[in-house]
Image (tube, rainbow, N blue to C red; front, side, top):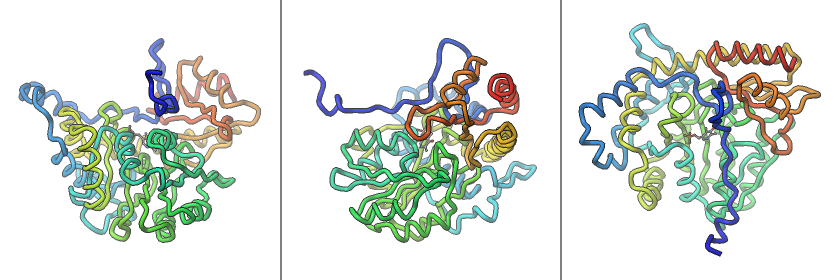
Length: 386
Ligand SMILES: *Cc1c(COP(=O)(O)O)cnc(C)c1O
C-alpha cells in the first residue's frame, strides 16, 4: 500500500459546490456578494505595476504591516462592522456596545492563509491525542475534519431544542477531561449568537489551563465580539476571517486575536509548516481593505437589511426560520425536504446549501446576496416552493 493508513482514514471537508457548468447565482458558501473596496483593488494593481521585482521576492513571513492594520481596524470598529457608525468623511466609530476597553496591539494578532489554515494551526498547537476538545454537534464542519487529521479525540454535544448551544453540557464534558472548547459565535449553520456576557460566564467555568476558541467568522453581521474578554482570560483565542465581512474569500486571509504569548505559540507552529503563508498580493489587498472600514461597514449593513427582509418573507410563506446574526438564514418547511428545496431553486439558476447530515437534512442554508439577487431568489421561492 503506497498511501499511509493515516491518509486512508481521512474524511476531508466538503465545501459548498463551486459549479463550472453554468453561471449560477451563488448563495451557498456564505461569501459576500460585494467585491473588495476600490482602494484594495487599486493597491494590488499598483503593487504589480510599481514593484514588479517584489513579485520575485519572498513576502514578509509574519505579515507585520497587515497585523498592524488589522489591529487598527478592530480598534476603529469594535470588531462588529454592521453596528459601527460611518461619518460622511468616511471615519468610523464603534457602537457603545462594541467598544473595546483597551487597545488591540499588533502582537495580539496572528494572520494566516484563511482562517481554515489558522484553525489547523490552533488544533495542532493546543490539542493532542490526550487532550480532547468539546464542540457543539452542529457547528463549522471543518473542526471534526481537523480532529481526524491530527488524531485528536472530540466530544460532540447536541444543541438544545431551540438550536442554541447546550452550555452546561459542554462545560460538564470539558471539566471531565480538562478538555478545550471550540465553537463558532454566532454559530453556523444556525446563525444563533451568544452574548459576550454569556460567553464570559461560560469561560469562567471552563478549565483555565485548556484553550477556549471562539470562531467569529460571522460576528460582523450582528453578533457580539469576545475581543473585550481578552483582558480577563489568558486561554481565550478569537478566530476571524476576511472571507465573509471583508469581501475577501478569494484572497485567503484569516487571523486570530489573543494574548501575545498564545500568538507566539501559533507562530512557532506556522514556522514549522509554512514560513510564508500569506502571499505578497494578499498582504497588500488585506492592508488596504483594513484602511477602508467605511466601505465594509456599509456592505455589512446592506447584508443585514436584506437578511431581515428575507427572514420576514420566509416566515410569511410558512417556513420555520431561525433569527440570524450572520450573513445567512437557516430555514425549513414542513412537507418539503431540504434536498428538494435546494434542487428546485438550483433549476432556477440559484445555488443554496443543503446538508445531508442527520438532524439537519430538512434545512437549507441561504447566503444573503445583493438586493437584486434576493429579489430573484424570492421570485424562485414563489414560483417553486411556496
Ligand atoms: C467561512 C468560515 C471559516 C473559514 O474561513 P476562511 O478564512 O475562508 O478559511 C471559518 N470558520 C467559520 C465558522 C466559517 O463559517
